[in-house]
Length: 270
Image 1 (spheres, rainbow, N blue to C red):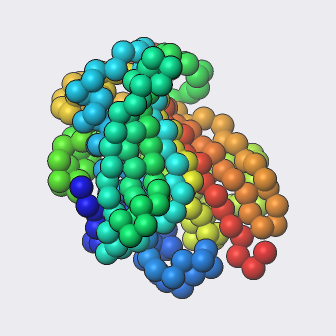
Image 2 (image 1 turned 45 degrees about the horizontal axis):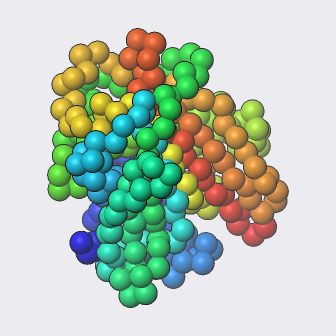
């Protein structure tokens, strides 16, 4: 399948998520990162990669206490450029592994690639509730994501997107980050995007198997509670740093899904 992302795709994702990172809309902001053209948000491209993986997994029905999606974003995915959405299944160490990638059709280089594997159950991280996503908000979000992707996403894909939105806008995220980077006096993570150049490099989503086969948000008859976990910072210097932030969602005391985002920050004029 060939994919060509347009500026409209970025605008739709930004309207849904509130991720108005200027590197996706302004060449002036993108050039300091070595970009001579605008590129789509990594999370928007991942929406299609996760859909391809879900389709594979639904046909093979992988066995396990939970599933882990892991993704690496190696190169920018530019607007109006042709990319091949590839999906394959492998048997490694007697375990089924689903893989999907966006390849540059011109040279077949990997730009974004992810995999989905069976893993042990999600570890229950003890954390206080930091917020909720109402049933109504989940239903509206699923409709918007379905229109954006051209198909209804499975619940793990949809919830992953919803949690990303909470992660970048919640003031709790900045409380966790300020403990490690006190010089960033911002209200939320999104505000940092306007201070330094930030790109996503990795993404992980750990979730219960039932979220793979369901696409009906009505299974949630109560708000989805979430907590934002302590952040990690590596390689901090005047030139930049690597930031890793996680969010988990639960019903009663059971964690359903945990998303971890890794961001690379580059300090301008360093």
